[in-house]
Length: 155
Ligand code: MG
Image: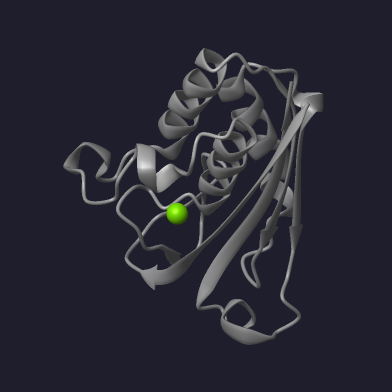
């Protein structure tokens, strides 16, 4: 058994669509990035790759590669899963936490969980998504960014 952890943060900006866990969420701002900037999926990709000893998301999907411009990050997750499987590992479970001051994410939690489970080809009970705020503190508390953390177990 091996464990991996992932962390990511993206800046919130006007004129962008907010996508978290593959769910489009109505909000006045979205996350800035080369891809769709889905911070939750990026953290899970890193945890998954880390668990298998395969480096990180930036190594496999460089953010200066036009191929990944505005890409749906679930595609990156699917490709990460392929890499992990080819290394002989099987995903056991995923846990993740989103840290956002706004918007309220609870209504979208199940949708994100289902998207991740479908992409990772596991039962939705093996994917757990949590959301918390930063209690008004720091860049996240001021609504300038959203962050995500994840752990993944593989066998
Ligand atoms: Mg990222």
